[in-house]
Image 1 (cartoon, rainbow, N blue to C red):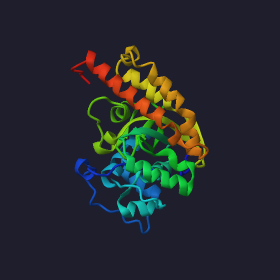
Image 2: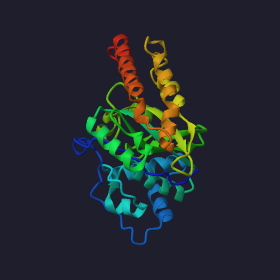
Image 3: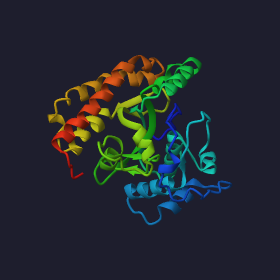
Image 4: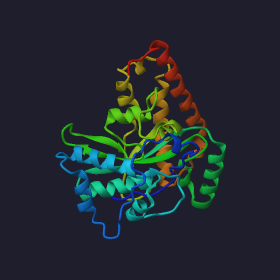
Length: 293
């Protein structure tokens, strides 16, 4: 736990990103000349008492000062990302992990693949990257994309809680409303979550880029998703196809991260699952035309 994870893609459409962000301190730059991460993180955390509160304060600080930037396939240190003023999802998670690690907060990195807005140009880029670097680059494509975040352990609830530095989201309910919610997504940068329609594969990661460990997909995408909507989703006609579709894509997603399978060969299944998600949304709003939450 706590080892750095490797960059794959996090390749997201960037067209309207700047116009929709609400980050408030992007003009600030951190002097990294003699940066001591432990002292720096301690100063940011201030009077926060619990590990969860410290994690929340650190997240808000980072999300307000570091911008999301499109992937350029460069490898950077924490100091370089801070100097640059932002990075892609992997880089933002890398800085956040360095800060919480400096305070000895328990965490584990997360790798995700999500259903993404349809893009033939992204598929062409992905195919070129697969030819150049292998199947691990198939984690993004025509209608899917990879994403990086992490979980921190909350001793109060005695469970792992999601933290996404790209979106300034912490806690399972906030995460759900940012990532699977049928309504307006609630994040610091809605253009990111509006493009990433819904995840279908979520794993904790090991010490190497090929090592996907525990699957968190059922917890987040089936159990917590249904609970968010007061267990009404599991009563809808299309629900049965949702957990089945998620389950069917777990091994292909895991293998794609490991570089042993080309996820592009599962494009039909990904498209079908996107249709199921859209159908669930229609069915839910048909019986709840004016939901309260």
